[in-house]
Image 1 (tube, helix red, strand yellow):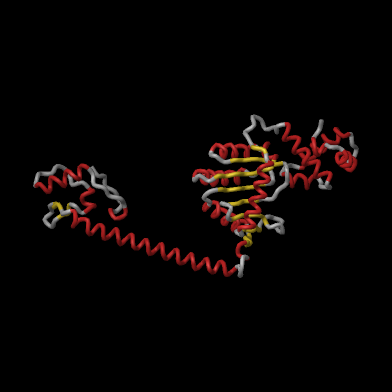
Image 2: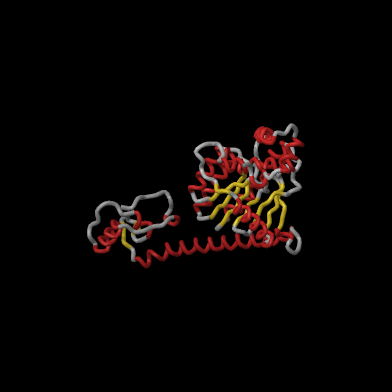
Length: 326
């Protein structure tokens, strides 16, 4: 039997059931019907209530006319609504392009404020259909940001989007990031790490890219780039970094593998030789100042130096930064 519902017949799919077919046949044949009239017959108009309170079967062609007219009217109204939305979006697009001037200037625009950047980026990721490339410098990310990113990334991966992400080596000792990466990897995402310093970059479908404005100290200004040539250039930079990066797998302990430890150590000492302070090195590599100081202390003992200047001289004179320790 059909099950009644609070939703009107016009707003839902209605199919005739086996009991409905039998009831309809009995009514047409003049046979006594058993039980109540199935709801599907009433919804389809195949059985109608007469003024005297009895139910009468109606020819299918007559019953279909009124219901199909209502459905066709609903479809036409939805088509008109869709056309109105498309027209409005088209008019807004013209204003949008005009607001950024003539030529290709609208293909690189500025978005200010964390809220506006987040909304613009979320819309681009939601519209992504094939590929999402992300370079995330700065070490481990806060748990709340990882939770938010996880939900969005899993949804994108579920749509069949290929996702590749590059972090710095220091995330390999950050348990919240490792937990996030484990779930992303299980869903089909790819994650690698580098010991180098790089800028934040997000590219959707190789059509639109997001980079921070270098002039913004607090990262509250982003550049949204849709110029095909510039986007291709940024994808090329990402692919080059991807080839040099090491795949991130779930290590059984929080300690870094020896090879990666050496890579981080060389990166720290390379920056020290180039004149960076411990604080600047920590900021560039996404790690704590204390960790940088520990690596510096290890290097001082290894080279037998008594000052930072002497250590920089000895390291620069050796082949440590190229080949690593013997």
